Amino acid sequence: MNTTELQRKLIAAAKANPPGDAVPYAFEKRVLAHVRDKRTLDVWAAWGSALWRAAVPCVGITLLLSAWAFFAAAPSGATNDLSQDLDNTLLAAAVQDQVQVW
Image (cartoon, rainbow, N blue to C red):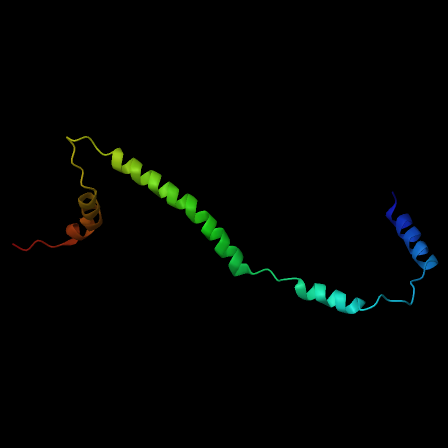
């Protein structure tokens, strides 16, 4: 349908039926009561709700990965100390830069 034709018909219908002078009793008070009842969106509450809902799956994933790491340990013959490997990796540059004075 042609929008300009529709707009013309709607304006003609509105002009043919003028609004009445009578306003319902306490109309403005009812409108203002509805406006006051509208609550604004609390952004902090929305974020808090979303984070609390996300906490449960995060805890579940953490427990599953912890159990997997615990039960999928290295074979008994291999003794890989992850903390020692991490220390060696982080301190490798410092050990190479030291000057050996004998």
